[in-house]
Length: 461
Length: 109
Image (cartoon, rainbow over all chains, first blue to last red):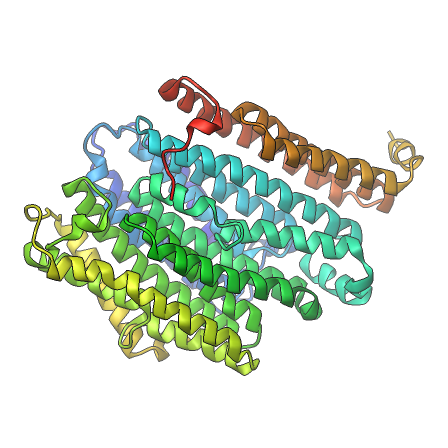
């Protein structure tokens, strides 16, 4: 719980720090803030949440919540160093953007700790409203404006749908609290309770949108493409992790007893997401849009663990979200340097990077291998754990679909590797600052550690 | 003030359900068919208000204040969303001199 309070206070303090003349000190200060919040989150591990009386049973900081909030804060900590070039130039509102990042992290932590649907709604909104602004933070750029507008209109629309679902659930069960809903749902026999089923369906639709899974994925490519790269990487890691954890928590804590009722819907969403994400990514010419489709497909992989829904699921989701976040941040970090220097997000911009910037090309290669699920990287074990969770439920056909789709994934992930090593250089060396180099190297090291010693992270929950 | 839940209860609960579902569906149809960002935005507000009505009705019928407290949160969050949303619309209008969502077609697959 302390991490929520600390992050809120840090966000406000940070707004005041924006009055300082020098914008360069903001980045180290915000990184210290995040490190403190990370320490505060980790400190709650294994404690039976005695602080602040659990906010009157509104939230529950159990090990599940601590693990996912740590992944989110860690992702934010890795993303921030790439915002360094942001500090110079006309981006005078840097303090506000950092504060919004901190506030949206608060929303994200609320989304993984909620015990009450009210907190789920508030968490989603705190996170989303911050992201609407950050998506449009490049005010003079029409693409950024468009991304912000699309994200906002669609996001508010789906918030309305979630709310209607919550209202119907309240009508059917008489409470917003997850344990009470769980008991009432089992007592009601959902087959005979249209309000409960309809409410569950609407909430599922809304969260599916927030996670970016098909058939409500249509906003993802456009919004990811138009948003400034640094916030795109935030959206595709932190927001996705929060969404999938909230999804899992809703299904396990409130509707675990009525598994048969939601299983067909969730399995259909999973298959559709896997197919649309991977096939859509093949057709892209822009690397950034490819990463957007790849984030859809990874939402699909994560949802395999939701459909399996057994004691392995939590660990599998946690490991995969961490592996996916680390690799994605590395990919977006390299993309940011390349597109800043060469002015394009396309595959062509990466031509010959292996010769001009061997380090950047190596980092990108490791990230792509991890996303594709090649052994010796974190992504391989992530997929292995997800598939073994599904195998335990005898869902072989689902694993066959997922493996076929990851074969498709290899095609588009390797396109950028081919461009980097086999094409001739189109431009000069890409300049990289030392902090960024350090972060990229630590991301690679973390990916390899997860791929060589998966036991360190796999049995946490 | 005690009689307000009783006044609410003079109308059967099903009617509230039908009415707010109708309002909600009108909102959805508006979002899907209208092309002006501000009207789309008003339709979203209509959806949120239908939820408020439904929560209040359920709350009065169950004599449980939780539903009405939720309504306050929805109102507060909706106000925050209005502030951000109108700012985004103004930003678009400054750059493009229009609030028609059809001109937002630069990002496409």
